[in-house]
Image 1 (cartoon, rainbow, N blue to C red):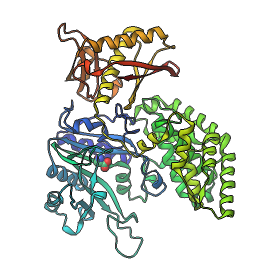
Image 2: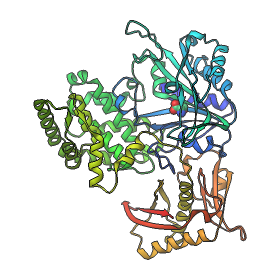
Image 3: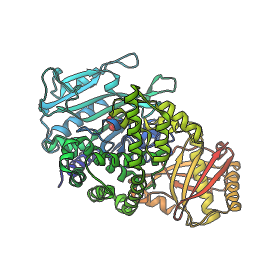
Image 4: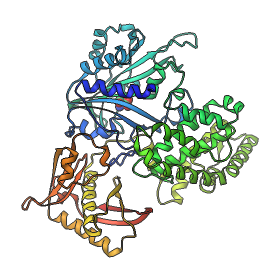
Length: 600
Ligand code: SER
């Protein structure tokens, strides 16, 4: 069995023995979190539960979760950083705390039966304390009791030893990180887990989520003290197999070798960073395109990220001598490696390849011209001894040649010049109704948004779903949902344009249900029971053993209008939703329609 599959299996088995429920990997695209584009950690889909919502599977959970982080994108190209990665995690929702979490981490890492790492090679770090929270002596004490001497316990500041919130507000707390000393010493002088030489590989992070960060920047102790741990699967696999990079692990080597094989050998050796970027980016693109939600390359939100990943990999392909079409060939290796673990990749393999081919064809038409325009501008800067790349040229590259601004920035930076991104976004905003700035901000991570408007829109989405099924028919099924503070977006199956009068009928039905002031209740049950009770749900195969079902019903008659499997949260009474208005209906792909709506 490949190392990584073995680790995945052992991890789940270990935590099952410790009475954890194994929950499925959630979609890469967070549902109902308007402030973030991707699931960035295993804890992300669990935010409502970390804040006190009841989880249907109980208080001890574990899983493996597919994640995308774009915040580290500039570091990708080295031996350890990735845009897409898998995280193994275990959680305590107000159940066990530091002692058990650390003891179990140590047991799993060091016991022969599990990973069998030499305990002597493990270094750990703990939070040193500051004005917001005290030094984490408690965690350090547990480590000492396990035989980790103080020389191998390091104390760092919030920058290193604090995790969360996922965005600007939400659950967070001090963490303790575990590092494996590979003993591969490549330089003189001091070295430790803080050093970036690669000798110490961070393998696991136990976060003690005991605070809630408020919008005012205050850290309020949480009533429910949680544990959130995350272990990077690629890194652990590399350590176990004694490899020098995550790219050589069984998780990545297929795609990595394919890129090398397609390139020119000399250039491949010279530009290993580019080989790694191409491998990482196309793996991430395959997973994003392959997600159940149905993302396609575009100029906004997740579609923009995937476009950026594909186009950047095409540019780097030039640097290693790959010409012509290659992206779907590399993605083929990704699908082959992961379809057994993530069945959605098998299901959407054709879509992944065709979207890659289409995006590649589009960009191949313009990349040459764009690159020579960029070079011309750079030569002019050199001649005139200027330092800042003209915004107009960056804008032309974006608008006419399809160069994502981050790509132009990279090209400009490689030549030692600067680019004024602020200025670019200003210009873009002038040209577009939609400002990219909002999206930009979201790239940096999300925030746990439990604002009332979002919750109202979340319930409105359920009402809309039910109303569509009543007006258009039971073939209507949810294909995707996304909520921002401004609007809700709902994708559903329906073969043709929805006529205006039908849309108004749907809108009126939702508003009628709002006016009636129906109650909303939550129950926990098995997926089978939920189905029997007439609940509708999205990704039936992905549910855990227990699910939460939200029912919108009439207190007097007991009759329900909507019943859906869903994580919540929701309003208590539909009156809270407010006036509902459909603002747009359009087709997004064959047989899939999209509605945008607002609540006022
Ligand atoms: N949320 C923490 C991390 O991402 C632990 O899972 O590192």
